[in-house]
Image 1 (cartoon, protein in one colour):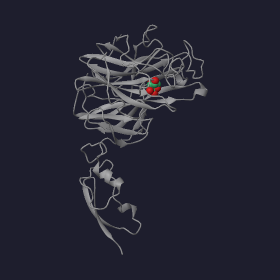
Image 2 (cartoon, rainbow, N blue to C red):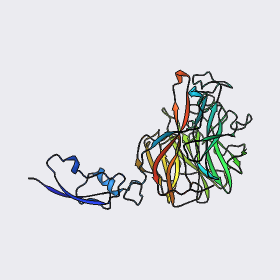
Image 3 (cartoon, rainbow, N blue to C red):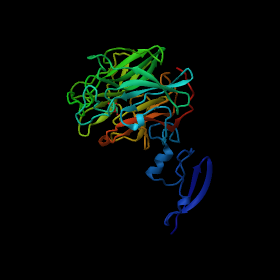
Image 4 (cartoon, rainbow, N blue to C red):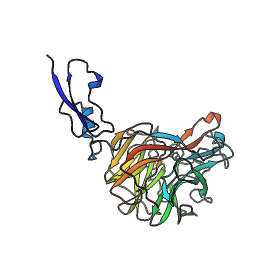
Length: 396
Ligand code: AAL
C-alpha cells in the first residue's frame, strides 16, 4: 500500500506541484520548502505537523502577515574611529542609546569609562578604582555620517555633585526627543555599583534620572531628581531600575525599563512607566512587568504597536516580541546571537506613529570579561538586521 500525497508548495511566489511517497524516506530535495523570507500565499493542501502549521499560519503574535516580518538574524561589524587604549581595560564604551539623525548626522550616546585602572571586581574599588565596567563612568556621545565610522564629540552628562543622584556614576543612557527638546535618561548611582550597601541582589542598585538640552550637542541640564524610583519592598522592581528606554506613544512618554525581583539567579523583567512630562511624574503600568524576560531591551514602533528585542535572561530570551498596545507582549519570533544592549536607529521612535516602520541597524557592545588579566572593558560595534518595513530618514 503506497499513499500518494499531492503537495503544492509555494516558494518565492512560484508554485511547484509534486508527489511524495509517505511510507518511504523522503528525498530531502522534495520536502516542503521552509519559507524563511518567502511569502507563502496559502497553506499547502496536505497534512502538516504543528511546526509547519505555525510557519504557514504566520501568526506568532497575531500579526496579520503570512511571512514572519519579525524574524531576523544579526550581522556585526567593528566600528572605526573610537580609541580603546589598546584594550588595556582603562577605556570602556557600552550601552548605546537609540540613534537619532540631526543635521545630516547620526548621534549616539553611551556609557564611557576612562579610569587609571580597569575595574576591580574583587573588593579593591575605591574613589578612583571602579568596581564595575560602568562604575565611575560618564555619558559621552559620538556622531557619524555612515554609521560605521564615528567621531567622539565629548562628554554629555558628567557625574553630579555628591549627594545628588549620579554622584558615583552615570551610565546606560537613552534619548528622548520631545517638543523640540532633547532628554537623556540614565542610571544615576547613589552608591558604588556592586557595593553591598545597597539591597539589590548583586548590589547594582540605582534609580533613573534625566537631563535636558536644546540641542543634541548640549549643554545638558540635570533635573537633579529621581524620575523612576525602585518599587516598594516585595514588588517585582524593588531592587533596580535599569536600562531606561523612552518612546512616544498615545501623546505620552512611554519609558520602558528593566526591574529585578531577586532570586538566584536574579529574576529580571521589563516594566513600563508613563508620563506627560519627561521629568515625570511617571506612573508605573498596573500590568507590570510587561515583558517577562530580557536584559537591555530595545523597542521600536512596528505597524500599530511596538516590537522588542528580548535577550540574555528569562524564559523568553532570544525572542522578538510584539504588542499592538505596547503593553501585552507576545513572542513573535525566535532568533539567536542577538545584539547585547542594542541601540537601534529608530527614525519613528518619537513620532507617535501607529504605522511603525521597523529597524535595520544600530550599535551594541561586546565585552572583554577577562577579569583575571585585568583588562575588563566593553567595545561598541554595529549590528545590522532585517526588521524593516521600509524605513525613511526622519531628522530630529
Ligand atoms: C547592563 C545594564 C545596566 C546594568 C549594567 C550597566 O547590562 O543592564 O547598565 O546596571 O549592565
